[in-house]
Amino acid sequence: MDTAQNQAKKKIIFSGMQPTGVLTLGNYIGALKNWIDLQDQYNCLYCIVDLHSLTVRQDPARLRKRSREVLMQYIAAGLDPEKNIIFYQSHVPAHSELSWILSCITYMGELNRMTQFKEKAQKNEGNVNAGLFTYPVLMAADILLYQADLVPVGEDQKQHLEIARDIATRFNNRYGNVFTIPEAYIPKVGARIMSLQEPTKKMSKSDENENAYIQILDEPNRIMNKIKRAVTDSEGQIRYSDQQPGVKNLLNIYSSLSGESIESALEHFENKGYGDLKKEVGETIVEALRPIQERFKELEKNKDYIDQIIKDNGDKANCFAQRTLRKVQKKVGLPPRI
Ligand code: TYM
Image (tube, rainbow, N blue to C red):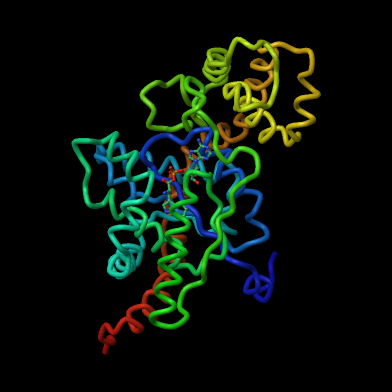
């Protein structure tokens, strides 16, 4: 057990995932897996960013169900709810409140440059809403509220982290030091797991083709089939090269999950064919996800335990967030509460 002193000295981590769809192998390798590895060294807050999900039209009952499933997947993957604060973004109103204040020091031009906004606006042509545009401001509020030092994310979130740093620096310069400037923590291998069907595109839970991604909760047979169908090339040689994005992606998945370096993976697959590569990658995924899936099934039966976590962790996060929000409100000149 940590002493209070040790606990106080530890740096702070914040990260989150949208409950927009089911979590994928990309979410696991790019982020969740690293969260598990970091939980002992840092004070960590892991959020289910349900408000962010509203930027895309959602079926309310499904969003509610998925939010709970994401929370259970965090725990099933190995995040300890005693050590980490695991909570829903919407249960801490300070996120929305800080987001408004920060949006008043964020420029349209900065938000216009966000590649994720451009991509999502193109994809959701009929619903380019203001929330989609100000999405990075809410994300900055998430991170800055908790004075996070480190934010473990996949590569696609790098630009959002940069704008969060810019907003924090601007606020500090204008009003005095309030926010810690956060650093991105991006894994060396696996920061961008690619679609199994179009390996030049990121693996995404919103892909229309289900064979393009693996879900954390996919059954072993389904995983093996999806990997078997993964697009490779006609080279026939297992190399780690940008000219062979499909094979490179499979090697990245293998290396991240087995813990072997790319060099040693290449040695391991020397003189083997794509069939062997796919079989072993598939088996490695099945074995990595098996304990998560088993634990998830147990958690599903344990409603009261999950409810208690939601309540306790939400309270803790609220307490923490209020401290920063009050400081910010005072700095910008909002009247004190009497
Ligand atoms: P989201 O929900 O799209 O993804 C959650 C995390 O998974 C990573 N990721 C991937 N990593 C590698 N390969 C992939 N194919 C892949 N797909 C997703 C993402 O980089 C991310 O780390 N805006 C964020 C959620 C968010 C957030 C935050 C994150 C809101 N507030 C504050 C950190 C801190 C998002 O949409 O992630």
